[in-house]
Length: 155
Image 1 (spheres, rainbow, N blue to C red):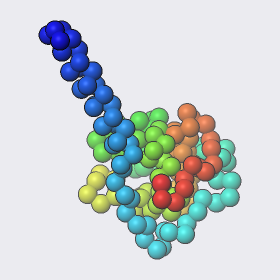
Image 2: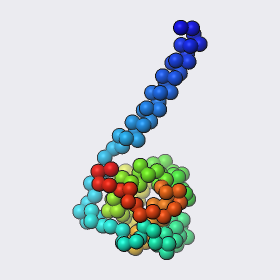
Image 3: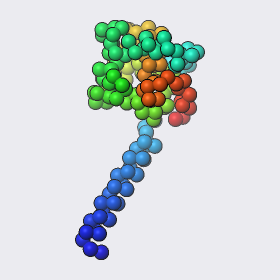
């Protein structure tokens, strides 16, 4: 084998390992913490995922227009692409589809320990949290409303 062929072979093996490692990371996401009992049975109100009014209200909250101290986009980005380290990528169905309604509601309400995601329940009503979730949910579907039916327990 010539030096050039050997170098090409090494490079191809490196690329294959890198790519397969990336796929393993997507499949081997760490387990989510259990949802506290007070949030476990929470579900989006009927029709809420695709309700245009709820989504519109959620957009105003998410962007900081509805409440000057609440601006989800300052970390999660205006289109769901994170702009701050550690913020979840709302465009990635691998994230969104893992979250039950209760899990998602809990994380917005109580925040996420040891991260910059703080509790919003003192500034947002339950209805407003549902509306933000409906708006955020669109990011994983190219900006189109959908019913979050991709969530399956154990995802």
